[in-house]
Image 1 (tube, rainbow, N blue to C red):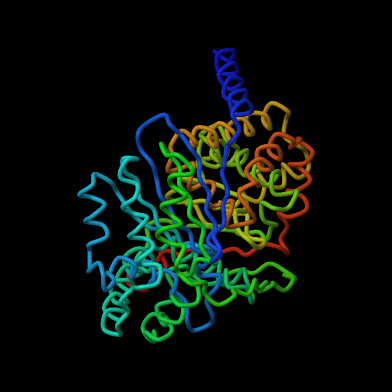
Image 2 (cartoon, rainbow, N blue to C red):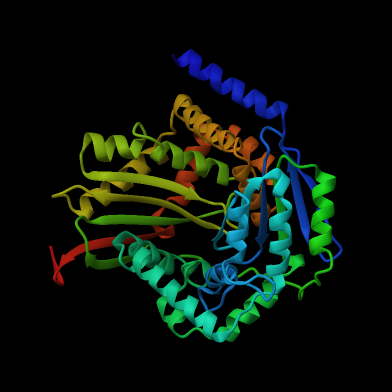
Length: 438
């Protein structure tokens, strides 16, 4: 069985090397960047447009603008009224949606390749022609506030995550949530949203990505026709907010109605562009990927201290971010017991590097997952877009090479270097009932 699995992995990786991602890159005079990948396996295509703006580009007191603007992009223009965008795509048999992150905002459509011209015209129109009346903005603001209540404020673990983020970063905008703080949403000025739109939604701050059953020259011509006449926006300053050195562990406590204690620790680490990012990615996999991973095997299966335990390296950002380790305590177990067990497993890997077999297994899992995703044209475009936003789509090749080069000693070294108390921020959920500690 093992021989079959290894052969399967070998075939996958050999195929990847034999068929490298063939991205055709173009740039219009107004600054719009265009990335096209021809994939003729099926008669479908995805059109995506990514804007280099997210919560990282917001200021104190004005959080949540990027996410709210994503909502407003579906509210119509003078040419295409409310809901017309999605209805047009759906009538053509396609789907559409959007996403906002700390660094970027993206919009995508997936449909038959012979109808790919539909989203091109629609996206070009709403890039600069949204109807943003104060009444419409405030109405959608209320929708976002309700979304925040349901998805964040009513979820104890999400509250812990937000509090940990706010404590971990002292002055970097990573400290606030993408959806925004409720206090900022309540006092939102529609003029700030309009200014945000006019500043960041312009050709020179956007990247168009097309993947699927298309011909590059034909699709490029259509994009030029739709977007070429749009004027460039104001120059965007590439700001580096910076972050002061953390000089000791930070701890926060959240009291909230919940069934079980929850622990979340976040360690300051470099982003994936740093040479240590690859070893941190492998470390996260060794600790957390699957039921045979260290944290699940020890905390959940053997000691039965937790109902879940996990770790992850979150390095796909422009600036240095965090490595997370967390667990939900089992009934009758305390947060102290679970936290000590988490720390103990991290200390083990600092003192003795994982085996060659353990590291190779982790690297195989990372690469297999990465490669399998590319079978989807949507995920091909999504992956290209993510790398483009954090440093350039050509980092794709660097990523795979970097993962393959990670050694057991690299894993031990980064754990010892970065997973230390002085770089750690820990959040503890204390379950309460009727305002009293259980």
